[in-house]
Amino acid sequence: MKELVVASGNKGKLREIEELLRQSVERLLSPADFSQFPVVVEDGETFAENAVKKARAAAEATGLPVIADDSGLVVDALGGRPGVYSARFAGEAADDGDNNAKLVRELAGVPQEKRTAAFHCVIALCWPDGTCHTFDGELRGLILETLRGEGGFGYDPYFLVPEFGQTLAELPMAIKNRISHRGKALAMLKAFLGRSDKKIN
Image 1 (cartoon, rainbow, N blue to C red):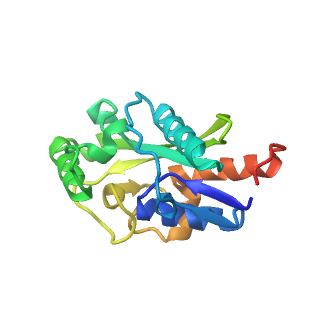
Image 2 (tube, rainbow, N blue to C red):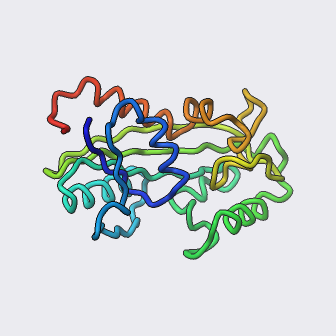
Image 3 (cartoon, one colour):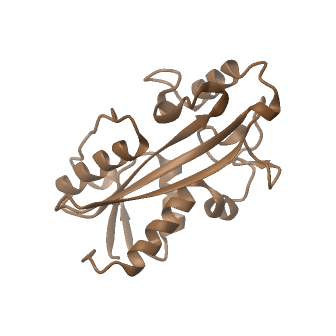
């Protein structure tokens, strides 16, 4: 694939996607590569609704194929929250520190075995003609009481992957990309691109 637009300004997310799609796409573009890029209100009730809305609007505006994802943390003890509100769990102006602090507060007193959670990701691939496909990924784990690790972003320092005994912020990028919710969704996207007969250049 020659060019693909990633409809995200999140630098951490862009680094992960670039690493994962390096052999599948010649040139990845981001909103920073365009003088005007649509701003989409993520008001969907599901990750899929938000991902498709973002990708479709960007594909129509740029005239290029676009991928957009919506992902978040679903915590069982919180009834599935923060879910689609993961990026703004502590408010519209919240940063990673604010969101993590709220997560820790809301889980205070919950025993470790009941702090189960999952990262979910839905990636939408849309073309300028409005055609879209979605790809889903999930990673299950536990929420820790204290952060561990310097890598990653978002809730990664609190998300323990039991089979590795490390948080997503501690795992090497190569392993994280292989097992993560986004990595699994992107693997499905890569497989689709490899067998798709739709014109994608």
